[in-house]
Image (cartoon, rainbow, N blue to C red; front, side, top):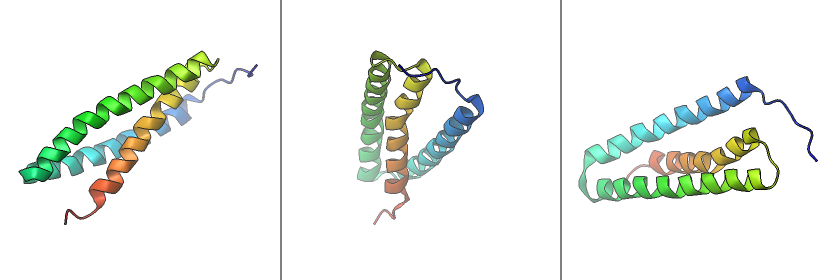
Length: 100
């Protein structure tokens, strides 16, 4: 059995704050893509909605898996952020490339 570890709230705060800043960068880049209009904007709008559904389901599954295997709520929250962080990082890489 795992020894209970008191979560470090400051560390968790910094982790979530970093994810928030990255998400804001994705929002800014997506806004520019949507503002250009055309087929690329249409594809981006659809992708934006679809990936949120997938990331949400993956986050829920990761949290549930952690809880069902004896993890703490803190562990579950941390695991739930993994697919969300991966999605944000993928979007930053993809949207940072030139559109041509």
